[in-house]
Length: 332
View (tube, rainbow, N blue to C red):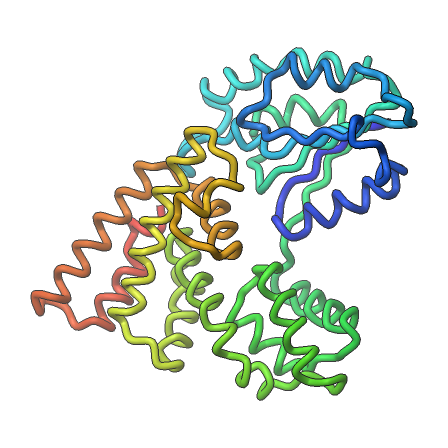
């Protein structure tokens, strides 16, 4: 069986994984032949031992490795990928690349990961010996088509105005869009979902919009951030509240980044972040993987400077917020 590598959007990757497992006929393999490893904790010898073992009283052995390639990502977005840190990781895992062509045909090995840089050393190592699928969240017209088809799959339809409204609020967070479309399908009771329906459900969508705005700010997308912030202000959110949300998110990012660096699995992040929300944990972990601890600390200090300038009356809150969004520090 071929080795598969799925990476990209956290909604699309698990769905594709389920499809692959079913297509390979491995959805009902015995528990003894089913293995799931966390990449940051996996060891080459352990993985190779699993992959080279013949299945016990079954046709296949299914081995899923989560997040291994992410360990080879550079810690800073501005740094060149494929640095000495990356090559060190690739060196540790080189026996895996050599062993894959020799693995039993009964082994189904699937790697899953988030977004990866083109120069990721483990990605380069696995490309010649694995079927690689990059699954990115759609944008623009592609996102509109995704919303339309997802609504139809839930037994309803949605107007173009409603599509624009919900994507403006949520962005291309497919998990949240899927959940909100589920609610809207129930709310509309079979009729076409209208823009007014999205407005009625805004209390549920608003928090997702705040996270989308924070994402855009921290990821250095000022145009999108400003658009979302204007929407938040129209919904009654004041600048001090929005700044507080950004501050909270940066604090959570620092906690999540520390946990990732320590190899702590995502399943344990709820307690560390002090939240019971799967949405908050998932979004924060995804974002933390894209930023180093020094970057997060730098942004947090810049935010505190802005907050202090507002409290001392040196800056008007709305102006301070817009300056902060456009600050080059938040665009690094």
